Image 1 (cartoon, helix red, strand yellow):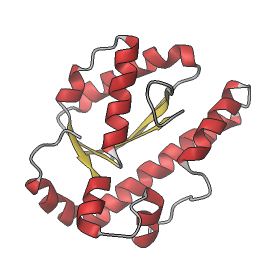
Image 2 (tube, helix red, strand yellow; image 1 turned 120 degrees about the horizontal axis):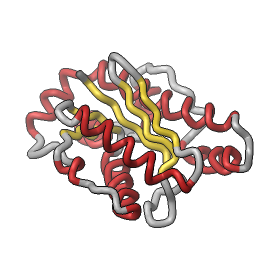
Image 3 (tube, helix red, strand yellow; image 1 turned 60 degrees about the vertical axis):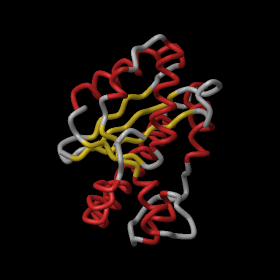
Image 4 (cartoon, one colour; image 1 turned 90 degrees about the horizontal axis):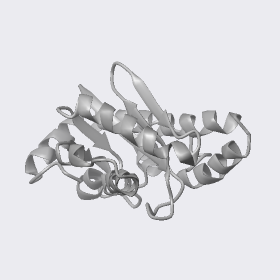
Length: 181
């Protein structure tokens, strides 16, 4: 089974930001863990870790794992949630692959998707998510859909990129010393 992971956060820095949503995509399901209010972040992180425990034997493909995984670890540490699961994951960073193998002028997910002919919503970016989340917390329930749709769009793009370059990724993975971000 192939697993794709994407998170959306309120900041690029885990000490001043928080998790908004963690999304997973497999050939069988899509799963989103949405933080309904900042008070619920710990509970949602625990749910994310339970899910990671179930899939820890699978390779998890992420775009910019050097952000997503450390952000999750930091937020877990903030809330006193055990982080051992992160030492057991087989993470493959497709952004790192893109930088090392594709050599494009831009390695943003949107730009790589466009280069590879993958349709992607580029009107909404990660920068919009913080504003959307603030609107959601202020009572605009529609913003939850926008945030999850953005996360879903990133996951679908990630999976389509993987499918287009799968053979190259597998060869590149063999050259990597370890899987941990």
